[in-house]
Amino acid sequence: MDTTDLVFAGAARQARLIAEGEVTARELTEAMLERIDRLNPVLNAYRVVLAERALAEADAADERRAKAFTPTGRRRKGSEDPGLLNGVPVAIKDDVDMAGHVTAWGTAAHGPAKTQDAEVVRRLRGEGAVLIGKTNVPEMTAVPWTESLTFGATRNPWQLDRTPGGSSGGSAAAVAAGLAGVALGSDGGGSIRVPSAWCGLFGIKPQRDRVPVAPHDDAWQGMSVNGPLARTVEDAALFLDATTTLPAPDGGFAAACATDPQPLRIALTTKHPLGVFPPPLGDDQRRALDATADALRELGHTVVERDPTYPSSLWSAVNVRILRGVSDDIAAAMPNRGRLERRIRAWGAIGGAVPDRLVRWAREAEAGQMRTFGAIFDEADVVMMPMVPAGPYRVGEHQERSVLGLMAHAPRMVAYAAGINVLGLPACSLPAGFDADGLPLAVQLVGPAAREDRLLALAAQVERHRPWAQHRPAVG
Image (tube, rainbow, N blue to C red; front, side, top):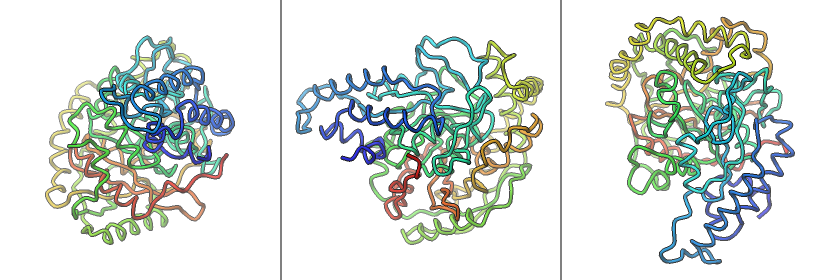
């Protein structure tokens, strides 16, 4: 296989190629590292590349494969399972701990190297993944674009003067450019879904507690979860199978996305919560929504325009929980706070001043908010809405904003995303073509509690109907 095709094959196919003996983990990792060496100076997707360690992990993956399979790819009787992601290069977002490395959070204010892996990293290692590097984030993961004074700007592989989004922007740029088979991201208000949308990827925010966040428990007051940014739905499903802590469907998530779902009722809405003021929904974004609705109808689903009821308190709860969440992270993880950017330091001070009783209110209101929004699932199986109202920002567009400017502007692009974090529901960003400038478009699918399998099955059906993974950015 051509090396470019190999690095763009995605995690699921890469895992199969290694298991079948078509390619070795070392060959795949070397190809990925060569591409990173060429493109990361342009994209700035990775803060640190763990080349030597990744090659050692690839060699170990090849040894596991040799013990588990014959040279022709047949499983040896009684052999140990080498792991779902054996030999696949996986990128790790730099708000997640890896033993022996700092967790930088996009800032020079970070502490020393960590002594233990985060639980999700431990699980990825246990499934044979090759951890190839740590990806860039905005300082304290606070905004939906990936730039920091400490580590610079990460660029969108589809158009280098644009951001890939944030806060999982480095992870998104890495997967989109063929610099990782799949990437770990975190999502406290759209931070997996927005970068996936702007980079032409499938990204899923799982149900809260699906993928472990330990030791970063209760991150952003329960809003933040870990999950995958992937080239294909199957890649994301495989990641969830490798990391889930909640019961998976029969056969796992990969099996769920292998079969078309029964006809579903899909509620189409462009409504967002009260209290947030996004830019008007762009013509291209509206076209993507309508085209996806048409595709779903062609596939036999019923799509009707139906608005969920957003609780009037929902966006207030978003603000309270994010403000306190950033402040909590600074207090817990930043021993050198004087090195924070001034506006993020101010953000932390504002969040720390939020009264505890207001935080308790925001947490205690969640059950009622879930009942109000969740009533839509009495009438629909899935809700479809915009992912982002417009295309990606230009790099540096927000560099001069004050802390109040950041707080006023950052919510605008996550108007359709962040409320779902408060509710803890699964949601995904589904690729939906390209705009007039050649930048990716996306729509969002939201499911009922713990029904990632339904979202994956529906998304995979759409992917088979109108594939997207064959599209690659011109960079490199």
